[in-house]
Image 1 (tube, rainbow, N blue to C red):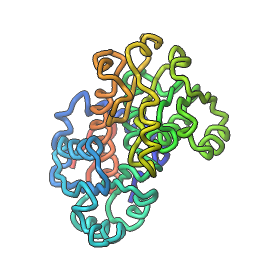
Image 2: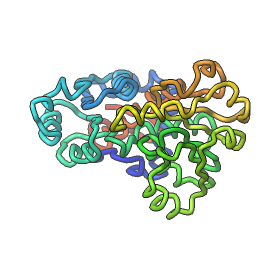
Image 3: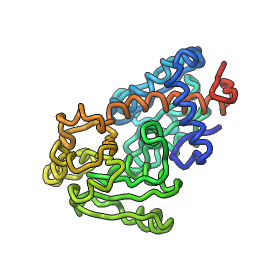
Image 4: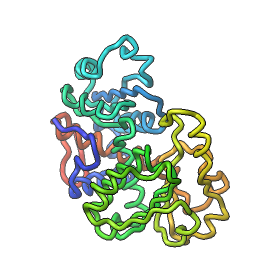
Length: 317
């Protein structure tokens, strides 16, 4: 049984196959519209989500399958004290594949160890968010045409931002990648990520708190919100939340081919006046999230022997 806990669970070759399949789905959605007929996806979301949960559900419905699950811990037996281990054992009796989001790091791994169906980590605490990373990679690959030889600015909450952490882990496997870490001192990238990942692999990076100074050098600017739910007190959150706001004036400093990405939800870190800028691709990014989750569901169901996935992107039950 194969699961997806981290972007690194996929080799570079497997990742390329997944991205190719996602692009094939985007190009010809009707070809894949009935592959998962009779199959069920369980979405176990112990913390709030809009894009991730609904994109998983949209992906399964687009493939002809069905969905079941819950959207908060309060609406599940977790409110009665049921463990993740027991929940996944039960869900394995009802569904063919599962996506789980949980506020505690490692909860998805626990679920995968007890499950009899493929489990997808849809976000665990501040640790990993692999399907957002797959979404980001598909966005970059589709719009830039490559995943290597890019200078990527990561801006905002780099301390708690699991999307940033996952993206770094995924991109360092490609040649010519460098990062610019843009954050206030209190929200800098964790030291273990710098020492054990970036320094260990000799990946070039620059740390700064000045977005304007680095804008002209970037191929991609990946904005993040300051996450209120990750702070222990509201005073610290209020002090940090408006540290970076991307507006038209700052965008004038950027190259014409720079992409602005954001995992969403946006609060106020990107001005709505930029939404019509062709370089602002965060809503396209959300659409790519559906295609890549369709590809992931197909890949894991095929690995589990629940569907057949022929070569060159075709699939059948």
